[in-house]
Image (cartoon, rainbow, N blue to C red; front, side, top):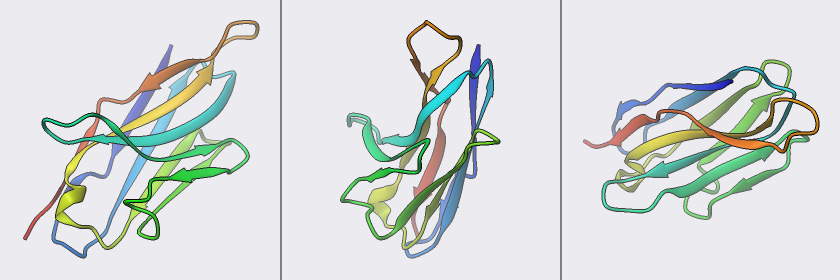
Length: 121
C-alpha cells in the first residue's frame, strides 16, 4: 500500500557531505511523521532524526549540528543533509514513515529497504 524509496547513499571521505532522500508513494491519507534511522553491523537500529507534518524535528545528539532533516509535505518526500561526516556515521540508513492509508484505520509504520553510507578515507 505504501512504498518508501531511499536514494543518495555512498562512499565519502571524513568531513565530507552526503544527502539522502526518501520518497513515499502509494495510498497515503495522512503522513504523520517521517524520519531516518541507522543500523551498523552488530548494533541496534537507532534514531537519527524525525520530522512531523508541521515541521517539528527530533535529532539525535550524535548528529546534532551536522545533519539536517527536511520534508516536502506536498510531495511526501524527505531529505537528510549530512555534513561533517565521521567514520562512526558509517551505517545503513533507513527511511521511516508513519502513515494513515484510510480514515478510521490507525496509522502504520513503514520502512524503506535502506541505503549504505560509508565514511572512510
